[in-house]
Amino acid sequence: MKFLNYVAAGAALLALAACAPSTAPASGGADEKTGTLRVWLFDEPNRAPKERVVGEAVKEFTAAHAGVQVEVTYIPTTPARHEKFKGAFNDPASSPDVAEYGNTDLAEYAAAGGFAELALPAQDLTPDLVESATVNGKQYGLPWFIGVRALYYRTDVFDELKLEPPSSIAELTETARTIRAKKPGLYGIAVGGEYTFGALPFVWDAGGDITALDSPASRKGVKAYTDLLKDDICPPQACVSLTGGKTVELFASGKAAMGILGNFNRSAVDAGAAAGKYAVVPLPGSAEGSIAPAFAGGNNLGVMKHARHRTLAVEFVELLGGKAYQAKMYEAMGNLPTLTSARDELAARDPFLKPFLDTVAKGTKFVPIDPAWVKIDNGKVIPTMLQKIATGQATVDAATTEAAAAVKTAFGRS
Image: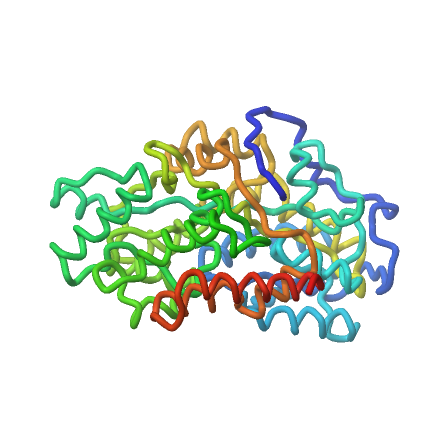
């Protein structure tokens, strides 16, 4: 999704009924009606809630399909996932029928021809969400959930120190420094040198962009983020190697007073020491009272080109990606539904959603919809830039110049 805008409008539900054979993808694979349907889903820091919901869907699906079993494999979300998917694209024997994939990976996977084009109903999806599963006018999956990040903070710590949630980046930095000074056992905020999607809101808020990391605006945003990777906030020796997942673990374990976490990290936080002692506000921008643009991430469910059970695969995607299970996944994992009707119903009864929907309403950003993004991501161009600055190996100007050159090379512009 390029720019995701929250649309508060109920619409027709996504059909959950079995699809007609014409709905099934026609390329590669086969269309067996019995046997084992193989499904790849992403692993999670706290996978148990996800497994419970998926298990319910599997039970419902197999009860409705005699002679069918569903085998679910949880795969890592590390960069190694790309090689695993490429292997499945090239080897039908190792290919699942259904796979969850990140919307940032779609351009690469579509270019490789790994997923089948689908004709899924989209009456309850906004055009921007459909676009997150579309390349060159062809839809390659069903948007399963969207993910935006906001600022989690420890209410007990803020109450004790008589602090207010920060309403600007300057206040965020000063608040984090104050907490670290008064409570040396806590990091003021959990940030990571390998946390690309934690850093990008600072760049975008400053008016910068991934494709121009050496611009004055981008440099301002990069500096604002790396200023948090300091001994008096989040010490570089401990924080420079932190990924987004590790920052979640740090906040959830009670070792940080703040963290830039997603709505989808709720279950992980609730399973840790910070449970019941936190609240969420939008990540502030540089202007007082503003909201920094969040990365509009999310995952899709797709049918592989080499699927052996094409029609069954489409039906399973529609079930697991339908309204009932999107709501269950939100309740279990905090995953924000893509279906507007499901999102509206949940927002009406769960205040936790408000800061995330406020963030979405202010405008979000996305990475370039181009296979070059995978080269940039896998090459750790942005993390390397952040780490060099945080550890003093390079100045902001030098590190951003180097990163910008790497981005241009990835796009074939140098």
